[in-house]
Length: 121
Image 1 (cartoon, rainbow, N blue to C red):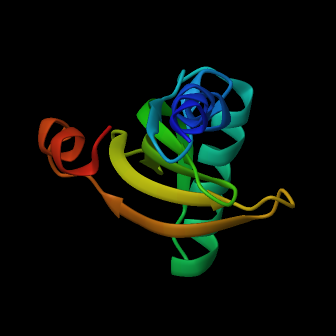
Image 2 (cartoon, rainbow, N blue to C red):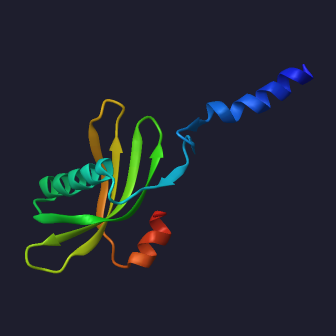
């Protein structure tokens, strides 16, 4: 019995890790990674569709992702509205296991520092 418990304690971390990251833990993104840019552009496009806005994607400022029945991305995205200066927006996107995406939230980030603290990115 004791050896079974010891074996379980040794093997458990091996089954809880995906590509070096714990399942369910937030992982810092690389802002220039192709997959991240695709998700960010989807967030801006979907926000425009839902709210009849006309934001134009500029770049990803920061973000994290979390693996949980798919992947949840929490991003700070820079976007412009016409000729106005770019503003930062907080977006959360769930990418399902089948590759489809759902915009969970999208709102303007009034303060980048506050946004990073509250939003965890």
